Image 1 (cartoon, each protein chain N blue to C red):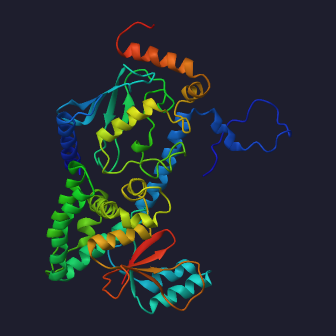
Image 2 (image 1 turned 135 degrees about the vertical axis):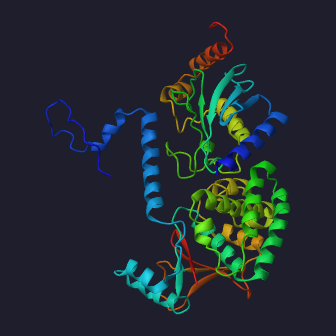
Image 3 (image 1 turned 120 degrees about the vertical axis):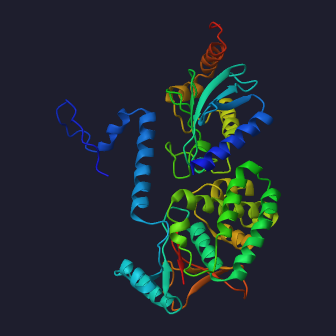
Length: 282
Length: 168
């Protein structure tokens, strides 16, 4: 951002203090005004992301042609994209707003729910059991029931009929609609971490207690998901999640993948992780 | 989703009426508009704000509880975490990316499972224990840190003022 243009001070120019940065002009603002400016700038950045990137791309895009142009001057990433393209062919990108993991999982859950009646039925049965999970985790009813109900109502609209449901425009265009569903997955993740905290607490590194971790890192919107959240969500959903990692590690011909839960099961949800971001891949 | 926000606010109001937490009263200013509330907060016991009753306004956004409400004291306030115009600066009222003073990364943030009750209880704790790392009112923070007796005298004057009593 350009520094604000200001009228130079009335004193004659001197060379005594060449280090005084132009940002010093902000010291004339009150703390309240400074804080307002910080908030305004954050909101402008958010708005730019919001207006340029959809919550989720309406159609899967070809994987290679979508990713390769991003890394033309980067041989390591280019080689990794080629490796991934041997196994996967398509990508559905998500808006990088810190909710991308939950939104990608949500989309794929609904998509698979529309592909087969069996999976749909399984999700609906699971949903019924989640009420108990939320209670067990100690949530006050009125803070969670709207999200729970809304998720259930949305699940009940999934259908295998033709033409297929237009999921992106039904649930992934209006931020309010989409965020309501995303919040539910956050609450569900936090509830799973809380009710099995004697197990999950062994892996805490960033917070002293599980209560603090869920309050700081899981429940608030915009907080990215890491291993612990992914393990918990896969467990409580009862649906396998596979993450393909693409980072600046050793140049490798092999896919780097993490399975949640580990094992030989099925992984209907596959995400591509690039540092700080998750997209869906097929 | 204003319908969802209204449902939630009505549920919270009902809950606060049935099980009011000690020292807190809150509800819509006018039952026709659930998006604007008034709250009365008693100053916490054994603090310099003890005995005071502090009125505040809460304004809820149409996408509540996805986004937090805004809170502003409607009486004079002198406190490190209250802006001179009465706005309350506390981490629970801020979304995670929103940290105007840059000191809140490890504090409790707004999330949709928070509630009016939790906000007001946090504000009561804040009255008892100001957070001078991220002052919204520098004068108050400075006095709190460097001249506590004077800060306490100002607080007592505020307490008496909220009760309609003359200064001591």
